Length: 338
Length: 169
Image (cartoon, each protein chain N blue to C red):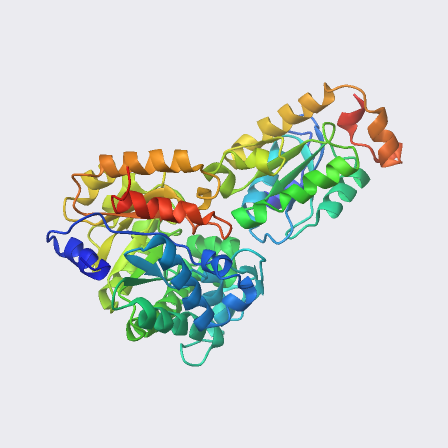
């Protein structure tokens, strides 16, 4: 089967030959092609070339477009802090207060260089890999964008004490989510991956999630032109996965490394697609033996689960991850060798 | 309001004074929330906090610790790429012969995900949450205080008045 056929079959509940897999190796593509990170995250062709190098080693079913959430903030005016070996960070949020953010700019794909890089890289990846593989685009959740725009502390205060302002900022975030997800669809992206921080009970209390976050997510997903994988966002969330199962347009759940697949399956139901769960930021630190053992154990444990995709949990793999970790994953998932 | 109350209050009111702790996010790291939470819990525990903010160079950490007679440095980083910059702080402590007498507490989300990172970056210890930070800071300072002679360190620092309190006990 071609990767795209395999993943499609899995989502449709049809037979397929082996578990599909994908790893977020966005910045690793820069290392593999000896491209300075600053140039790599400024040129869609270089990004696609880097992902081509990832594909040569990993042969994944899923390829990821740039995982650079700071660029979504930069489109609104955030100051960035470039990093030598990883994606840029937000040095300074674009707005001091939530009220400032309401009257601030509303960037659109096609007229903002940061959003254009994200979308044009998606176009480049779709052209290069889209006939063979699924192209997935990470996107900032509309429940998290406000924190990127005004900073976490200001956003928490707004969320807790100025709910009218919070609602209006959510509306701005929804507009952005809609225009970017539409642009991703037009770019040939097949699926969105949406990490959630301010809709995760480990971050925000459940009452506030139900009151403020879930209605926003429901609105975002109802109108979304692409299926969306909800990503754990860095903390465990399998125990509370039932909070989200009623959301429309969900493609699945990417669970954390500390989460249990059996618990997630129990709560998400037999039809939900689950992704995970070896921790991405540790791939460079794991020895080949450790990684091999952990992955083989995971594959064995998930053998009967026909709705499982192997993916890394947490953030992307470090840029300096040894390439043989990718071939190891490929060989185990594809059943090559012993 | 809580922050203001804590800053206005006498740190010895609720807990015995424990000395100065210098906090900051390492160079290139801009995720301040965790650091601020740690600072709040440390203040409640009686620490006087010198908060250097985000994107602090190793030299600035050590200079501030010496100037403020700090007993400990607490450094925060959220992401792996920035956490690795803490190695520069350990090198700076080594260079000034302060390792072993000026403890280095490290923290941030990535340390919970990757416990081995504490050693990788040269940290003396970490806590899994801000609430656990006071116990960590006390333990590290107690260990440093019990770690033996400091004459070399004093000599290397070149200024007795600038030495961490913990180094003298």
